[in-house]
Image 1 (cartoon, rainbow, N blue to C red):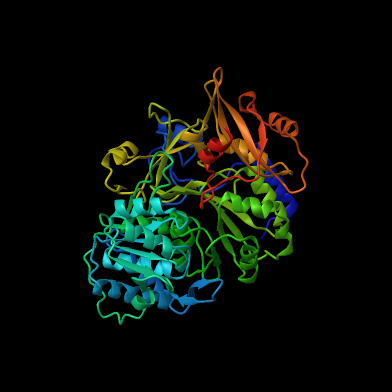
Image 2 (cartoon, rainbow, N blue to C red; image 1 turned 45 degrees about the horizontal axis):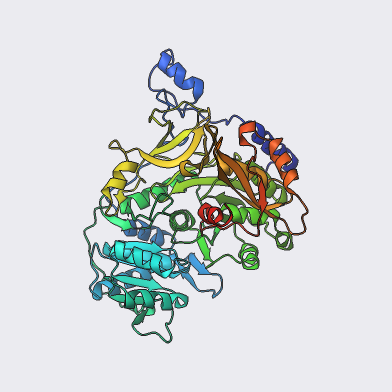
Length: 574
């Protein structure tokens, strides 16, 4: 039964003040409750052990280690054979699950016929479209490595990734053939083949992807794949701590996280999912795409965000599940255009890539008042998704997913108890094999015992819910106190006159850094600096006040996954 809306909003408001207890069936400790260790366990949560290690609220599941990813997905394609798996919103092109498997087999055969073998790397430099999953499955079947490239990358960035990955082929969209041609023809690379999803008019040397789709499938290879050891995906990290690094994810990493997400967020053939988040990003690859395929759900692809197209897709395609990033949630909460569309089909919003503040969560629920639920998902390229909210607790990224452990540590790597902030560490089957050609960086991030340091600061509540506050590198240090910019940004976004906001630390000789806000006003707003300073001051402790002031700007620069590009703001305004 759906929760009455006024009561639901009261509950949300209570969450903003203090996390409510979550009722669930507790796991019984394996030893007698009279033992003091067990009493300590039970006094915090059945999800948090005496060692302060956090576990999932769900029991572990079987994660097969002997099945390559394509074989695993092909079984799902057989199960949902006649149902539509993917659809292009603009062209209307669709593939059923049966056709998805059939096309992947043909493309794998065509690549094998051209001489591609296990361990070869191919790069994809393209926006979202229905052939993305086809090519990914074909690579899995041939034992090749699939390396995704941000389609907004400049030529130097593209060249760097092609060179580092050793890619032998590039697959691109018609709109990007010029950039690809410039990079491959005029610079050193190992690239021997160029493919285009469509046609490359005016450019020589590009094979239409259609030639692979037209293959007879007779050369489909029988490849010996070790799912636990053999790499399937080679995405590149965002490079927040240096140049982007190649992240080696195996067949097992990829399959395990699909199953883990599906265990927390199951879907069905009745679900229609919007495929707007970029598929080059791990969030788009797994959460938006393959994890929902496990339930027989269909994905409607959009190549980029355009306000009216986004809303029209939600409305006309009766989208039930929308994976979004914070800027898109801000759009739904604040843009006047939203009121012109019927978004009543949207049942669930899953937000990831950056923290989503509780006030903004409330604002969206108030506007989309038909009963939508908003959940956060946490992840990074190196860990995929280790935590996912299923409780709709504002501000939390939820519980650990199945088969995964978490903990928060201080600067001395000591595990902290609930409520104390530290760096979030994760251990599970989805953790990357390592960085490609960079053992030193791998060893710095992954401990010998398998724990990986995420670089994110947060804490776990008494009930086992994970809260992420910010990146370690982005924390503002005011007189020795840590000030998470994301917390202040979420607060500012709760102001009715604020369209978007970013907070950076301004160097100060006496205090170290002062929090300074960069704010985009809503159209027609007359809010001034003093109003916003008072607004924040009334809601935070003294160390978190905007002592660096407020600067009004035209827009907040963000990357395709929604993360604020603080370096651009700093270089321009500080």
